[in-house]
Image 1 (cartoon, rainbow, N blue to C red):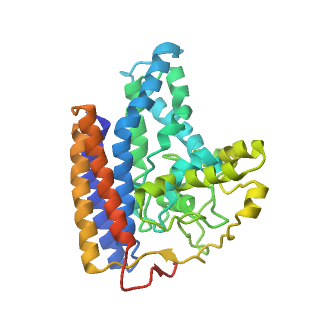
Image 2 (cartoon, rainbow, N blue to C red):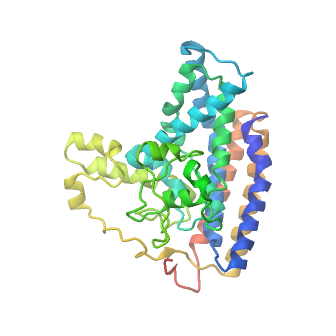
Image 3 (tube, rainbow, N blue to C red):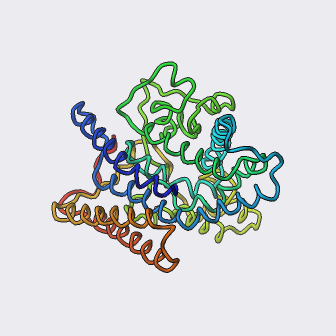
Length: 364
């Protein structure tokens, strides 16, 4: 079975768990969902999967080539120890890719999509990038060199991704000993926070042990609630711009930097780093957690219904595309994928044009 088909089969489970989390939040009077934000987050996940139909061939193709031509010790997919070792090794390499996603501008440009939501709930887990394929594959080539079969690599990558769904919630508190070893909701809330004490911590996918080993662990504090989002808020429901905003900012600074070294450093320095001359010409306001109102254009009932209808249609078409991607001719696949992207753009366009209420609400 194709991994895209696995995602289609898992989608009803995702939606069921999101609905349960909503109900729990309403019951506890701890509501963590906003309608437009939820549609945007899930829509970005669908966009990521549709783009992945094309880019996974590129990434797995490179992996397959390295495995076929350079594997030192081709391992057997029939051994459970190979599967377990591959999962641990993948999670270890994911830690370093994830860390690079917060410490290197080029990688942050891809990863930022996952952090743009100013809410934190299970729909946030589905909010994935469409450009991670550009350079992220480099981190997993050691598995091919060691001899992990492509099938094993693809499956453990999917397992690692699916595990991380449940940790995106504010409805599950600390879990005692589990929090010491594994990525859990409390640990991952810290990872998504923009507060100084929490910034760039807890990168582990399944295991948080890597963070303890390499000095990036930070527990959640009772007296310091988390603020979510990014330090340069997206302030848009446009899914295309969500994927391009940081790339555009890096290109802007690269183009305007006078020093050729700075033009290169822009892409590899930590996020937020800017050449002195560019920062002077194009200053940005200092970031203060919680000071910027949350982006939430109010929707009339008509716009809410229209956005929801377009979203449901996008879900249906996406499911058909992902389920049949390996059977469709290239032009058919490209056309159907373009249709999905257009519908998701339409959802964003509708929800950005709220009426009859202030464009923002106070930040929590």
